[in-house]
Length: 613
Image (cartoon, rainbow, N blue to C red; front, side, top):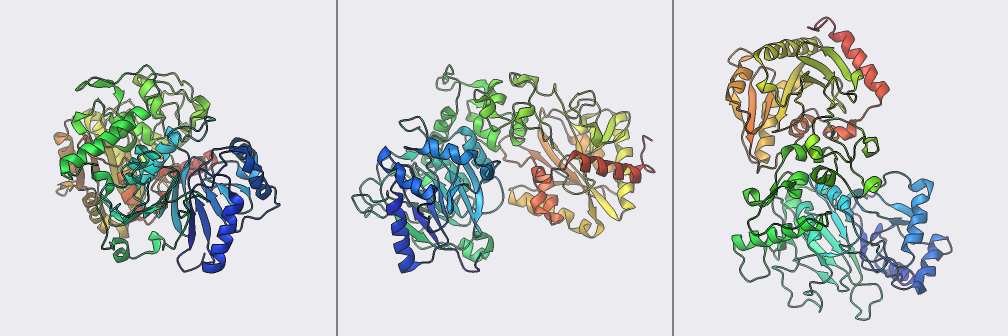
C-alpha cells in the first residue's frame, strides 16, 4: 500500500457491458491514472442473454481485467450459473468478506460485510429490496442484521456500497441542477436509508436509478464527519450521463481529528432528519424517521398470518426488532412491541431474531444465526442447535452456566464451593480472565442470600490474593440485565501500573455514552461498597457496576430506553490494557486443548488460595 491516499474508480450498473466498461477504465487510466481499484454498484450482469459471453471471456482468461475490481448487484442473466461456480471453488470457501474471486482482478462481494481496501474501510450490501424477474438479487434480513452489528463497532467507515439509493437522500439538498430522475422515488429503499444513517460512511455509493447525482455533503447525527452521496448512471447509457467517477479519500484511520471534523461550506443537514414537506421542525423530522422505522418492522415480518395492530394497539407477545438487534428504539414507550433485554442479549450473541420472536426460523439451515439460546462466551454454532422449534419462553432451560446442564463446559471450571463456582471465561480478554458464577440458576449476584454473599466475599478475596502474588490487581464488574438467564461476576487482572487510571478511563467512557457513574466509596473496607450497593439495588432495573481494586464501586442504573453496550466493561478494559482487538470475545476464541492447559495452570497457582480445596 502506498503512503499516499488511494485512488479509487466508482462505477454504476454495468448491465453486462463489461467490454465497454474496461475500455473506458483503460482510457481513464491512461489520461488520469493509475488507479488502485474499481468499485461497481448497481446491476453487474446483463439484462439479456446477448452479453453473457463477454463476461465469460474475462472469467476464462481470454481477456484481462485491468485493475482490481469489486462488484455487488449479483443478479441478471448468467448470474446464478457464474456465481454458483465461483462459490464452489476451493479458494472461495469459508467466510470471505473481501470478495470471492471470479478471475484475476475480479471479485464478487456477496451478501454484506466489511473489508479493508488500501487502508479504506469498505462496507457493502449486495442485492435490492425486491428480487428480479428470475427471483434473484434480493438481500436478506441476515445481510441487514450483519450491517447493523457492524454499525455498532468502533471506527469510521470510509465507503458504503449499495445497489439502490436510500429513500430521502435528496431531502434538504439543492436539486435545481440535478438531472431528470433524481426526484423519482423508484429505485430508492428505506432500509438502505436507515442503514446509512446508522453506519455514517464518509462516502455512500449507489446505482440502479440510471442517473448521476453528486449530492452536497451532509452532516451526521452523533458523528463529527460528513457524508458524501454519489449516485452513478449505467455503463453506456444513451443520455451520456456519468457512469465512472474517481475519488481519492485518505483513510479515516490515518486522518487527524481536525481533518475528520472539517465541513465544506455547502454542507447540509442529514437528509434522514428532513421531511419531504417544507416544514423542517424537530417533530416533523421525528415523524419522518419513525415512518421509515415502521416500514422496517413489516419488511422483516416472516409470518404471513401476522396482522398489524390497529392504531394504538400493542402486541406485547412480539419483540421489537430495533430494540432487540440494536438496543434502542426511536418509539420508546410508544412502541407497539416488546422491549426485552433478555432477547437483546441473545441477539448480541448471534441468536436468530425469528427464533427469538416466533420460536422458529423459516430459513432453516440457510440461516447464518444460532437457533438455540446462548450464554456469554459460548462458541456453538447454529449447526449445534438441538431444538430449533423451542419457544422463546423456554429461555434459561438449557443454561451453559448451570452445573446440572449437559451443555456445561466442565473443563473451564476451576473451583466449586457451596453457592459459587469459579471458571475461566470463554474467549477471555486476557489470560486468566475468570468468572464467579452462582451454582443456582440466579439472575443477579446482588440479590442472593446473605450466606451466598459471604461465600462470594471469600472467593473474591482468594482471587485477589492469587493475582496479588503475581503483581496484579483485580477489576470485578457485572451487567445486571432484567430477566437474564444466569448471573456471573467477571474478574479481570490488570498490572498495578494501570490501577491509578482505571476510574478515569471508566469515567471517560461513561461520558461518551452520555452518563456519569454514581460512586460508592469503600471507606477503608473493601466489602463496604458492595454492601451499600446491595442495599440500593431493588432488582427493578438493569444496572452496570464495576468494583475497583480499592473497593470503590462505580455504578449506573440503565434505563430501558438507553442504548447501553452489553460488553461495556470488557470494551473499557480492552482500552485500558491496550488490546482493543480483543474487546469482542469472538476474536479471542481458543481451542479446547488450550483452554484445558490454561485451566490447569490457573488451578496449580490457585491451589494455596482456593477456599474450596
